[in-house]
Length: 167
Image (cartoon, rainbow, N blue to C red):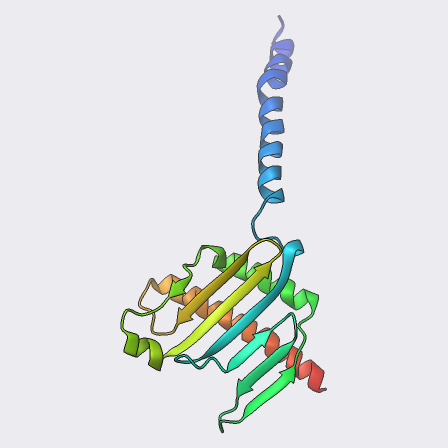
């Protein structure tokens, strides 16, 4: 057997099956990913102090209500476009939302009622991810930072859509 035929034999028996297996394995992982944008239905954000989550947004219905600094409740209809929703889906994936614990609340119930609470919901065809986050949560700093960054991104996209609709 020549050196060239040995290399061809090695490639045909080891390298090619390994590459085929890799494409099959990772292809199935990507295909069966639990949170895919094509299965995305809507997102919801609710926030407020204590149990009164008067500030709310739902991307499915476009219903948006919030309290102004003077205490007046404003209700609007604000629709997020597909690109904004896709951006938020990928931002949530980038920040690791799928690995966040469902409840991120402080141990002290007095802190829980005095600090702002946020409920972030991402709904998909077969699954949903719901995170209840309290600003006084004393968990890992990286987790708190990721929550706050995601909330800011969602609020930013809502504000941008509201500004576009007001023009």
